[in-house]
Length: 481
Image (tube, rainbow, N blue to C red; front, side, top):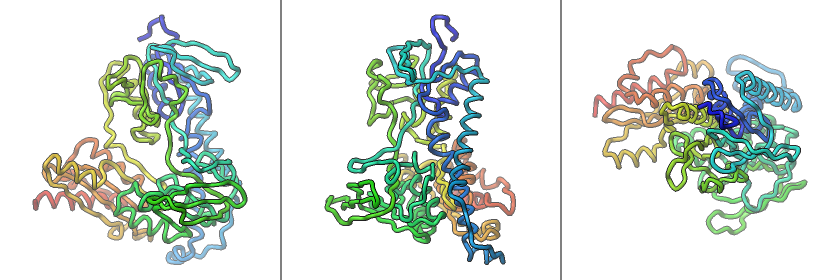
């Protein structure tokens, strides 16, 4: 490290959470670091994803809570009709974005990282091209290079975006207006979170899912209880097994729905707006990956568990990739972990990532969270590896804290090995599920047995006892098996 033959010890292309954590960790360990960014510092999460959407969810969640007359009446509370100002809710999100982005930029500058504005690309081994906004092109050298260019919303064929009446989550977080009737294409975590926001603020929602069930990426038991509360109980008309084969912007927006199997047109809708929430695609075009003979898989850059970029299955020296562009687990905290691990390996510390112990959360009201294997995956592993799969369910309706909050409709499913008691996965729907999952994720990462976890003392009365009950039920199955 620190060779004078290079302009930098490390250049990171992309200043989202993955790039940020990598650059900060490298600079704190004495490396000379440059980070290239063509858009806003902070990437998708800070500017167009986690940060602004959580601000909108927080504000709309309070509106929902205050407007739930029956729920409040159960406490003996009677509230006046709820009023809210759309622009001030939008301002709350925008102000939060500006603060987080500013703090992130200052943190990098204080760490000694050089922020380079423009488009970065590979120009061969340890060489980076930088196209600045004024058109000036520079060639930089670095001992190591990390690609952290993130992802953008995926817009399926047949859907025309105008940014006003038909838009993606990138535009939705600005909350420029509240459509009376909005169609949301996709029922993954992005679609669910925005359905939560829009219905809380008085919009009617039609949810369109191409797969055979709504919420297809979630555990079926969790989907059953969550869809009852998050979809059926709200002003949402959910349609599955239909494809939005054509969407034309305008007033109204015209949607052509086709049967997913036959592709025959089954319905035409006219709505005020459409949010396209059909997943994300990697930002790998323009990186000139060909100069290093790197072949992508659907645009995703192949890496090993040390974050080294692979060419024909073999790791390259000096080239690394982290975050959404790798397609591993497209979550901000995954990107951050990958960034830190890449630097540790650059510094000579052999570290690898365990994706199975990284939790995920959907910040609806109530929340959904998960970590590790799905039940279907766990069944496959149990057959392959020859052990018996244990499955237990713990219910919020037996939890004193959830009952005190009058929020007792919730479920935790825990998957574990009956021979060793080691946790394989967990899925939670209920109050503060996003916080509860962390305890399970830590136990999974440490490969702890439910036999040991079951004797750990949890605070009473707290929601964490939902997890404790699951551990004890699982440990009982070990004793009786």
